[in-house]
Length: 241
Image 1 (tube, rainbow, N blue to C red):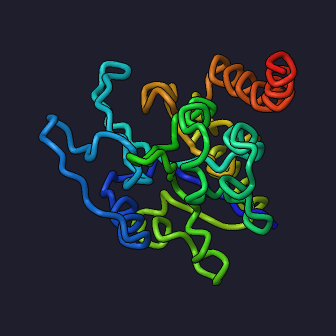
Image 2: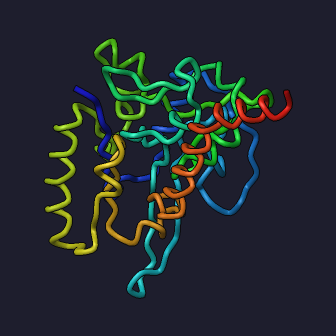
């Protein structure tokens, strides 16, 4: 059965243990940063940073609230980036876990199109155009382990398991939280394998917390563009002959 994450932002303490664990398991280098007046660090995802805990200070109902959001690839059930790439050697979905995996072959593709196709603005490229992002710790999962970020989380914010079990856990937790926070919701739960629970407007946590309709329309456009590109190339060659 495919795997899934359930991320409960109501118990995230922004300890950033998940960030560190991700770096350590994937042997990714640290990044030079500057003091930006926030504990959120580094400021964004990158080719060498697959996970960032977003931190926002928001005044809600006249009270200051810290909103934490452990940002990572959502491993979409129907991944637009996979459709846009159109090359299983570069981007493919693992048949066992459902993880969307990028390989070094992405350097031969149009990185900008693939990045633009993601409704959550996740993939990042290196200097040579190779793309990278969270891989669900697919090697760990295939060996009976859970992702390093989940293993490290001290509060239970990060959860991982069979997709059906995670959806059931998410629904149970949502019902509990709604008693105090009636606006609580699960974000894009039917479309992704990384299900977030938030209690306020998702956009307050991070602008790419949910996929907007414009994002979805763009991914469809890029997928269609990729689909018809071979026909366009053939027509071009015919006209040049």
